[in-house]
Length: 414
Image (cartoon, rainbow, N blue to C red):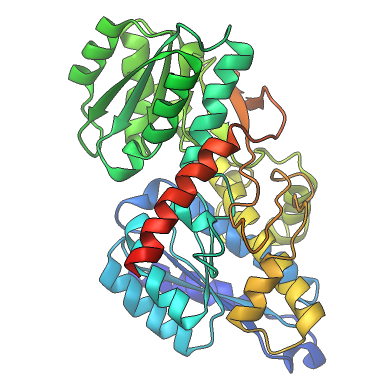
């Protein structure tokens, strides 16, 4: 495994080769891509990291960011905060201006440190939802819809397309962890406001055994079920729901439900399941087509071709596309060298950026580091995820009430 990770780091640095001598004289921009390749997040990390590195290869082959190549420094922290701290120490000493841990335990452990060091930390689809409050967390950028925003949008889908929320019975089936419980305040507020019956059904981590939980869900006889887990537990949830008489089109998932999960359940059996979607999927997208033509098919890809266009690959591409855009804006306004503070301001200058249709338009400001909270609902059609709504945000007044409530507690404790 160590040899594999060293290979990842080498590949990330080698993507900078091919720049002209004049460009190579400019200081490189360093991103610390410090991920979990060996423990909890393995269900997505390889595809996510491959998307990040392929995008950086594309950028470097096009001349970098205003002539500055981007070095993606890839390290495995194994979802262990202490190893994450050690990796952070190494890359920060080496001049990294951005870090991505893709791990809630590690990123939470690093909050105070990155705020003190003034290094940008991106936390797409993990970490603290209240870090959306840029006035309290100036160097942390969730980038995409928080779990609060995801739950709100799924509930709104039922209101708009499922005959309304009033009188409905909705089950929230979740892994018994802070992640699984995170949507509850939003759902509870909406239940009071919209008049639906919300019941919660936790199951033990990692979610391989859920049969007792779903027996209870069956007795509740819900109109809709939210499933809130990740990795192998998600396919177990879908399978158990169907086995207990819940139709696929009654199942709505957090973002962590991918193509591989549908194959595990059975592609046709899972037809109709819906999920929150943070990025568009597939290869029929301008940016993904460009990566295929100029990176993957040119023999410079960081992994298997079949991963290109998957949910987690495209999320990885989107994180780097937004980060590179922030760096570009910062360099254009403030010049080199790029610092964490300049990069922060670069993010806050991003307006309606969608990476050529790959993601919903995001706009950041000093106050909003979530980017607007947009997403969409997609449905499994038996072979692929198909969007059934446009990009939009829902019930953001409730979401921001939760963000400000938690960020105020953090500010008081810091």
